[in-house]
Length: 346
Image 1 (cartoon, helix red, strand yellow):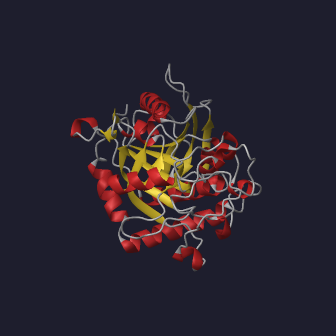
Image 2: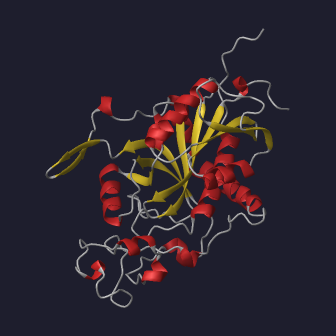
Image 3: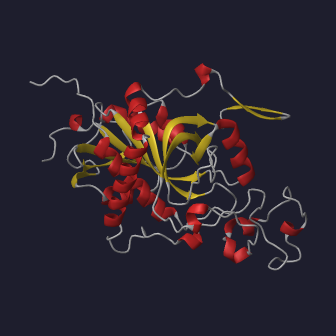
């Protein structure tokens, strides 16, 4: 039965892209309302909402009008006004992944990253010798609240994590039965990782003689605008590919990784900079909205890895990774129990 008012919704799911929201909505067990026809919203709230049920939770799905921290922050602030009893915001979608973690674990395309903290890596000062991120406590994003921290620690236990991953896989199987939505696995042969120093650019066998990609043989030379828009197959990326054990073993099921996520108003498309930031900040993924939501609502980022945050980034894995993130979100909500709401009833 649909709840009578907006006050009965305690979980918000926020998506920046339509493809991300489509996957989440496809996993609703019930749909109560679309675009405020039943529940409305507060005056001045510019967000678009879809209300429904996932498991035992009444959830409100919020569409962002665009990408980036500022857009996400404004949407989260509006959501707080219209849905005052939301206790948890899940930022769900796709992200770039760090292929190898400090503990030697591998991240593959389609895996899901869950945040236990966020680093706003573009917030700082630019000096002549380089950029320095502000790290003072008062100028950084805080830790999640105690309830979220305790929950994520419990979820990280190996037996629980294995069960969590299996539930995600089961939801993905169901999602993939829906026709013509693009949520099928693209194939392990499409999961290609180049050395971080190998850049996406035209090469001798497929470039015009006047192409600026050929003006410099080093990894610091210019890349033409056409190359930036074309995929690896078209321009002939034949660099050294890095082998991964999971791919060699044919392990295509999505794995779940819990750790620190980097957030900025920048699309990370550089393997060199990815590795530098990952090593310095111990992050496992890169995205663009988390820092905006983080200080407005109790927040967890759940995002599927659709690229390796390098110059070879493309959209081949975007739909599948949006699907794995949505399925992980549904499995997540099977474990999450909202705290008792403090309300007065007539």
